[in-house]
Image 1 (tube, helix red, strand yellow):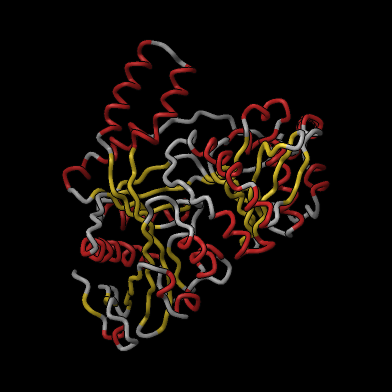
Image 2: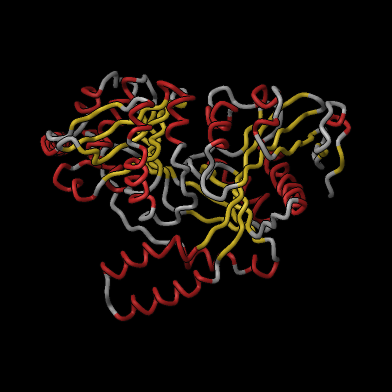
Length: 421
């Protein structure tokens, strides 16, 4: 069913409003968060900073490289009831998997591996697409893509609404000369999977796949401090903590002010780039001033901690307090110092300390480095992503292509707490 112009939103003076096939639901599409009215924050979740204008404005004003933003505001009759965000960018599989192929060849330099990686690289050169990401490519976890106010829309209806919105968004972007080849819905928790499989996969030809899980550390009710967290560990892992602290004794820690960030921005961005360029499927490249804007707009809810070795900035990490959650955001470090001082492990423990200081209930550690994150107590949350190619023939083979290019990450989940033994 085609979307029709909505009299509900046209009455509010919005010419880009359309009535979706779902009864009484209209959507208005914006291409700048600065154009939305007060209805956005009225509909956005009050406990998710990442869907509120405060965060979305600083991100749009300091955007990742070559990213176009789309904002979707939903109405039920004339009442704002939901929001969704999207990002459009070019994705080159060749750029994203090259580092992974190099690592595979170092680990397994046999002739078969070399031939396999050559074929994979050849296929990747053919995968250069313009993708619409429903969600935020800078974040990991559910609830950062679409959200409706409680009771306004059923979970089943939400998937119908999302699918129909994507069709409308494609037409809107076509008018701007932006032709989407791939629609990417990220990320869904396993409890959302039955509806997603039924309504997205079976009915609307999306393909489901998984990649690295989201690593989350939930604070237990009897943990009131970092010492309580340590006390819950088995002796083996407490020894590991002490060893990391001992190796990190030369690290001078400093919480960076906005002036410090400005002053060290070139070094900070260099350290970030070293890690980002080595990541598999790195979808976006940050704007250097994104870190400055986070500190300027979020204040104490954003922290950047610098690690100095002999007066030189050798590493940094960032956190964002998202109400009861602490988001372990971007980091960077100089590999030359990492092994000797166990900087990465010290970063993980320092993030946990910040979580206690800011009275959070959990820490979202995101992807990558799964095994070492599990060693500090983070548990894997399997996330499901849904893809659809605009070309029906290409879409038939999308699942096989994604599975072929998707890097495999074998890891052992560690169990650091006494009651897990």
